[in-house]
Length: 333
Ligand code: NAP
Ligand code: 3JN
Image 1 (cartoon, helix red, strand yellow):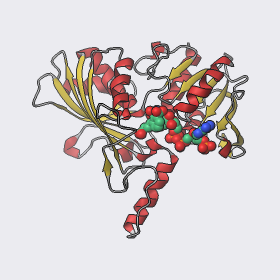
Image 2 (cartoon, protein in one colour):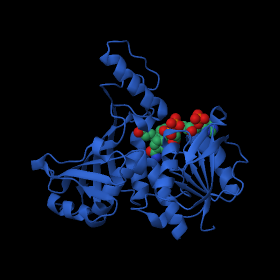
Image 3 (cartoon, rainbow, N blue to C red):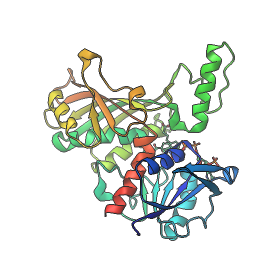
Image 4 (cartoon, rainbow, N blue to C red):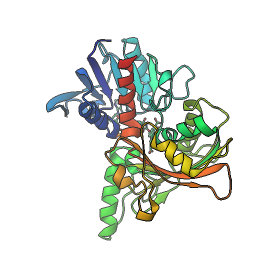
């Protein structure tokens, strides 16, 4: 690879794709040329990179000639069809979808956790809810060995894309002005509501989002013995996912030590000063890169367990930023 890269974004017009464009710009990623790809619906539309308009092209099998790094965020079906074409053309693919995450030949990477797994070909970016949780869990696992995690998520609508952001905006206006609510993205009203339902329900009673958290956590932490008991909930916030996490460990664990440990760990900001009402909140994490951890406290029911609250910007660390950080590591290897 040259020192400056020809980068392609497949899904450039979406919520994640637009964030990728913005993060490449703000981190001054060494872009030599940028190819923006989306469906035929968006072909001809212009997006701006470093003040210059760039026309969006229709994604096709021959879109990747000369591309060094292809960032995919157009859904699993699109990745399954087009990521192999990009690799065949010589690109490294960093894929934000679930298409290849559990493929044993594809690394599933969070740079703070398992950068050693990065290699050319297809690299999978984990699910947003998994990413922010494993950034906080990695130092805990290294020191205390995690046995079991019980997690409940409070996920923002931006995790469901541009149409969901518009739906929460419109429904909020309609509810407040006493008008009937239209539902398109979610099966129920999301404004002023919580839906214990993210992605599709599976035969075991869990949703696909919940099972992503189970399987991806084990793969990234490279430990299939870790037990994960998840509940994923969509809430009426626009940005940032929050999670309540209970962690049970092999070794005795204490909240005060974990605060010190996490304060010195990469990608984490500890916000934990309850007497001053200071703890991580979605409205503070929006637009920030780190994972914010607080409410770190002993589990009074179990000497080998703690509880914490973790918040991160789902479109940044949960998707676009993590992908760009993987691309940055490629340049270093
Ligand atoms: P979005 O706002 O709905 O955007 C979807 C993007 O995909 C748009 O650019 C759309 O292009 C493009 N697209 C759809 N069908 C296409 C096709 N047949 N060919 C080419 N492009 C196509 O959704 P989003 O929130 O950005 O999410 C996109 C994907 O990213 C998700 O499906 C998921 O796989 C992944 N994602 C991952 C995470 C994570 O946790 N890491 C989080 C959110 C999303 P048009 O504008 O032309 O329709
Ligand atoms: O709902 C969220 O907050 C995150 C959504 C992620 C998502 C949305 C549609 C399809 C994914 C994902 O990344 O797992 C997928 C998918 O690729 O399966």
